[in-house]
View (tube, rainbow, N blue to C red):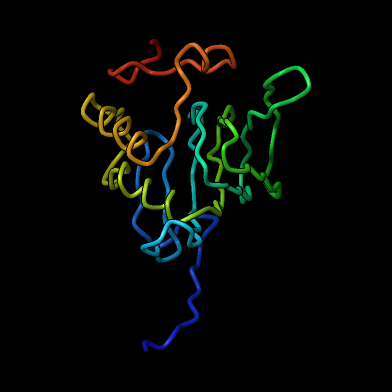
Length: 180
């Protein structure tokens, strides 16, 4: 049986030495080894750059976010439907599995999160993420098609362009520019 090691991952607020994956705008660094099963813990460092939105979606897996730096808006279900609420460094956001959610960075500085979720979501990000090798570029049509196919394979749900528009999210077209 291999010896278990204690590991310190330094610099989570700035960057780590883990591979960085671009997930259609936001980036993730998977900090924990992923188990083969779907229920193991996955901890990631996520960065949502200024002006980037994670559209309305849902999945069976819970996701918890601790905002390390910056701020972002989180779409929550309120008494009058969905509403955007500000979340700042030091805030903790709990998203139960199956709950539609979105978040966006409307500030001029990156929002940095620690994301606590399942290995299944970590595997999804490995499946759809592109290694960061330079400045961010909009996804091409093949990358968007791969993303949509991966969503279906993993059993996740993406909201329609109309559902996103109803909560103030304008999705990019295949050129990476806003539009439907």
